Length: 474
Image (cartoon, rainbow, N blue to C red):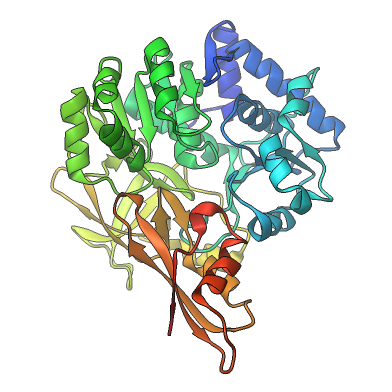
């Protein structure tokens, strides 16, 4: 595979693996069920036919909101075979958050597992919904030829813009987010990936899950992080790599050192991403397993930009640019090139197609030195060996358990409360969890509301990880 011209969209790369070895196990779910590559592609094409029967045509939007499960994979790949652009929504998204994303993206069909559907029936009214049971019963075959620049997937984590907004990736940038990563880390058909993080986030979907499928390897898929399931699956299937958020590694080391040592017998490496990894935790993992704990750095707008590799890594470093990535440090105010530390600008195969808002695009993309770069909003430093280190952010974003939270989203909800005159949301350090959102609120004169009421007003409208944990009246 060549990062400069991978040649095929993601679903066609996986189909190529199916043609090479249709009987090879592609996916093993936590309940023991398995899909071979041949079965995975057959089911995906059957889902494409089901979507076509539900009036989905090329470039239409399919809204995918599921927890980790085999039908997530067949639903995603099926939507790609149908020529659709797939909105991938966090399964924890609820009520107003979910209603906004649905209204904004206007999907022809929603793919939701029963757990989400039963929880959000009211919000999903008026949208055709297919559950995992519908996908499992799908039969037949359908495929639409897509262009490399056609929209492929959409996320609603616009970290650079700092608010909930569409981040649009073409088939080119979707493939470009995975192939260079696979090449750099040497992932092959002999590898087995243990997937513990949500597929609704690029770290779980690209680095943990699709990296295995594109390579012809096997993915061990957990619905969610569960130590007992990890013990069970890893004892039988012997994973060779894990990509997860720091909290996964911290919890494993805290709860079961023996399991960590046992994992080290089969792992080639592990990798942390999505949030800050304390160097002491990185050292301890390596001492317990005898295997490197690597780091990967990226964002929704440009997944997998930097990473360390088994052959080249340093404790505390985010790594170095992956194949095809150009990086430039600049003064964040003047955009003049900086030598050792500055805001990171990037160019590369994984950079998003853009936002739907031209004004936000004009802020995210800038021309420096005759080239167009994407601003990351992150301040990084570089050492003499070319390793990069995180130093801070210019963008407004918090991280809780690896999930991104945009203060602006919470502030907009707070301002709809009849008693709130002004509101600011800030992050408060919360140890291994990252940061918790704290709302600083000024009430309207003569209007009374308790801290609990304000907190409940916000938290009933957002996903669990976005909840305001404290309210301070100004």
